[in-house]
Amino acid sequence: MVDVADILDVTGDGRGAAIERAAAALRDGELVVMPTDTVYGVAADAFSLDGTARLFRAKDRDRSVPLPVLLRSPKQLPGIAPDVPEVAERLMAAFWPGALTLVVPAEADLRWDLGRTQGTVAVRMPLDDVALEVIRAVGPLAVTSANRSGRPPAATAAAAEQQLGNAVHLYLDDGPREGGVASTIVDLTRRVPHVLRVGALDDELVMAVAEGELDPLEAADRVAEAELDAPPTGTPMAPEEPAGDGEQPQG
Image (tube, rainbow, N blue to C red):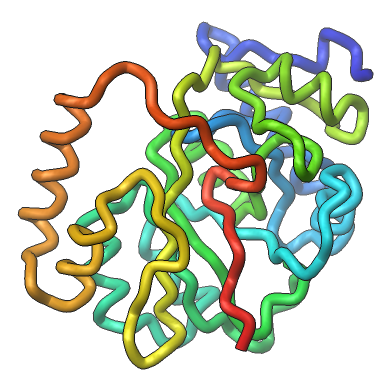
């Protein structure tokens, strides 16, 4: 177990200093647990080979389940995916930041190790200020749910610490993330986009945008209205949801 001092409160005035410490640790190849808009995630610098290797070990995760990547802006996507299709532009305009993960072809020459990706990468922009600040300070992050593989995802920093202990350098505590729901995953690597996993978003709404049948701004308005009408808690996430995670297409 890590010392309690390594669980850093980011709800008050110490947030900036805590995020600076987290960013420095990530740049050094360490792991950091941080909040997202789903549950708590455990993060590594996506371009740190030591960091992503630590992440697989900490999770006891099979490399056949690749690590997803969180971005701070759609403008970062062309740097890791050379040919962003028009359908991705529509989906990002409608649902980012938020609970939509896009699987796209990855840049072949990137020096990273996310597992057996088969040339793809799953990307998402989270709707969470703390997560976005960390990404802004470091760059794209490999992030998966802060739990051992097969165990329940962590809704608090303390719950994550109970599972991951000193495999993680430090924990950012932003209060509970109750009622987290898995992100919807859409595969854009094939000729026809399709939903790989039904999640927080209405898959019919997502596909209407993907197929050009619904304006992205209208879809965004519908999501915002649904969030206002939603009850305070949602369906608990499956154990391997990453705050943007999921099985990527194999072939």
